[in-house]
Structures are given as structure tokens and as C-alpha cells.
Image (cartoon, rainbow, N blue to C red; front, side, top):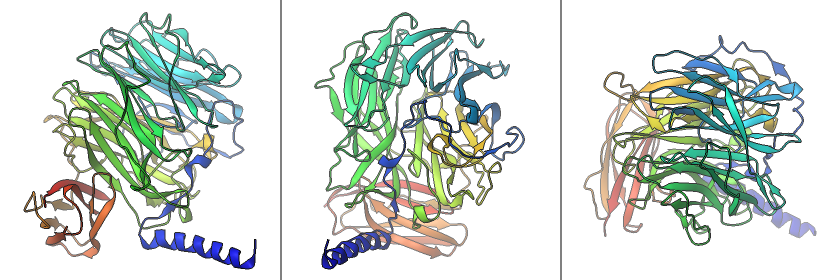
Length: 576
């Protein structure tokens, strides 16, 4: 390379970096560099810090068990707890008993509707079991699907002999497709007591295989493993309707050879047995290079009681030179309306890699799950990271947030910080990094949440942080008039724009209870920012901001007000 060529190459790199900073959208590292874990890796050479997990936590909930294996999934979080027909709750998680010695098992616990606990117990037959998912039978027995790592490299289905006793019968799940050996199962039971399992492998070149199988006899036999698609991320989940025979496989499908440019796909069977893998795949997003917005690795889905499929995922901006930008958008799509709705946005002006890291297979909004109440209210829980809360080791401490919609996902309440336990600058053993959460698909009087309270941020299998003893916490969050605490304390209020619909210009009013740093921005349906209306310190009181949309096209837009760690988003319509 000549000196002249080298000069222009360096200058181009500087301009790309400077452009991202000036745009206020900081860069993250290339996620394709993260390790894919298959369960056979040697324990990372990191320090072990005992932390007495039952005593040292400010995060809320009941301690169900513990684990040194803070990491629970590579991609989509799926379900690690389930509510049965009697109101009992079944829990399953991947427990590292002695990580340095390579001891890993699947553990189980149960609490009845009368608050009688079984107690944490091993549900494993052998060392190496993990990456657990849970469903429940029609007679309220826990049904587990999990992977066994090491030389075994098998997948298993375990069914409790009676409800809540923790004594399981074990059956192998087919996981071989040609030379591919699939590893990470996700499970769902339909109303006809058929168990549906999707599995992916860890091959990165050129793509991973997605397979599907089902059992009609409580796991004793399974259909031949079918090849559904090929992917680049471990995203697929499978969900069943509570009111019909519909079953759906939802996943992120690559748009190119990278791991971080994906569309969101689903395939639906209307009878739970017939699938059209060739032409039945539906592309929800149709992202492309012009949008510069893509999906990554996390998806979640559920059917409501009107038989409508809901899909949740995160999207973000990509850089032309490679890598991805920090800003994350949490999105909702439902099949009935066919529309994409923005739930919330995580945006920050700091450069993540210079301060702290979200860790492998994570975005600033990640590991989401969705629950549905019988009145079709929707609840979405997820981990959210913030650069103001980072461990001494340089990894972001997570908080668990939740958003609710009472109109089928068309509008969403302000996000509630369920855990609210920041520990900036924490030393190993003293952190409260709340992560790898899962909410039960069935919401009754409560949202049932199960998560890891990581005592040192970062995922140990990715060699992030130190080995600590981490509580597995269960939080019941009331959503009825008896215990309605779903409204977060607000330091501000955001009103509906007026006029709406509008032609060219509209006004947005909001109130601040105290002096605050405020960001008010407008986004299109793909999550791309089209205008920043406010970005700075403002005094307490009433404020009104005019949005001049003369330079943007007609359509639906979202405006989002963020202040004091909270955020609320509303929808408006531009008609020209």
C-alpha cells in the first residue's frame, strides 16, 4: 500500500467514526465476533468470587434458586417459567454448580397457588444439561426441553410425573439433520397436547440449520426432524394459540452473510400439523440497505385470546463500514392488523465501547418475552442497559423493564423499571445486574417474572466478568385493582399531538415536574429518526414544541419523550 493510499484509508476511517459521533448514534462492536456456546467449552480462566446470593441483593423477588451460570440463552430468551391451570408456577433454569469444575445441570422449582414451595431440585440425569425451556401439560405437569453439552451433544424432553413434584421421565428429542447436530430447543404445547420443538445448531459457515419436530404422546416419540430454514443467529421460538389449533415458528432470517442484518419471519400452521416451509414463510419487516435498520438475535411471540399472533423484536442501525450502532428499538407486530408499532427506544450519546459493554448476544434492549392476559392486554418484559450503570469490570448492569398495551399492541404504556437496582462501579460479588428474564406467557392477576440477579455483569461463557453465585429471582407483579402497581412514578407527562391527523405542522405538549434533561424525537415506522425536536436541559413546567413535517412524506410516525431514565412514546398521523 502506498503512503497516499494509506492516508486516504485512514482519513475514511476517521470520517466514518466522526460521522457516527456527530450523528449522536455511537458505534458498537461487530456482534458476529461473539462466541457461540455449545456446552463443550473449557471453563474460562477467570476468578471465582463467593457472594452469598440470598443475602446481598437490592433487586426484588423471591429467591427460587441460584446459579454460577449467569448466562441462560445465546439468543431469544424464550420461557423458563410457566403458570398452570390452577395458578401454580413452574420454574426451570440452567444452574452452574461449580463452573470452574465444569458442573452444569438443569434445576427445577415449583410454587402452588397457595404458596407452597417444592424447593430447588435437580432435574438432570447427567452433567452438561442446560439452555432450558419450559412448557406445561394439560394436567399441569412441567415439560422441559434442553440441551446436553460435551461429548453427548443431545437434546432432551423431560415430563414431571405429577404436578409440582420434580420427578421426571426423560426422552430424547431428534436433533440430527444430515451432518448438522442441532442444540438449542424451544418448546410449546398446543391445546391438543402436542408438544412442538424448534432447534438450531452452532454452525456459522455458511449458516445454521433450523429444525422442527413434535410429539403427540408426551415425548415418547417424535416426528422426523424437518429442515425449516437456515439462519445466522439463534433466534427461533415456537408458540401455540390458546383458542385454536394454530402454531407459529418465529425467527430472524438473514438478509446477507452477516449475523446482524436480519428480517423477522414467521411460519404458521393452522392445524398444528401441516407446515409449508417452501412458500409459507412471511417476512414481517422487509428491511434493506436503504433503511439501514435491521433485526439481530432476539424475538418473542404469543397468541392472544382472539387468536391473533403478536411478535416482538429489537432493531438497530448498521454502519456502512460494518458493525452496528447503539440505538435499539423495541418493536411489535400483530398478524391481524399487519402493522409494526414502536414500543420504546434505548438511545444514548455515549460511545459504548469506551465505557462498558452490553456483552455477547445482547443489545441495549434485549432478551424480551411477552405475556397475555385473558382480556388480551399484552405485557412485554426485557433487559435494558444504560451507560450510566456499569460494573468495575466494564460491563453494563441490566435492569428489567416492562411495557403494557391494552389495545392489542397499537399503543404502549410508559416502560416500568421492575428491578430498579443500579450499582454503578460495582465490584465482583456486589453487582445487581438483572438479566436473562422471562415472563410467563399466561398473565393472570400478576405478571410472573423469573430472572438472574448477576453479581458481576457480563456472561461467564463469553468470558465476561468473574464467576459469582447468582440468585434466580421470582417477581410477581400485580396488574389488577387489588395490587395495581404497573404505573411507574412519572417525572413528566406527554400529551397527544394536535392537530392529529395533521398536514405539515403539529404541536406536542409535555409537562416536567422538575428540571430535567429531555430528548424529544420523531421516528418513522421502521424506527429511523426523522427529527430531534428537543435535546437538552429544560426547566420544570409546561412545554409546547412545534413539529414541522413539510420535508417528510405522509404516513404514521412516533414521537418519544425521554427524561430521567424513563420514556413514553405516542403515535401521530401525517396527511398531505
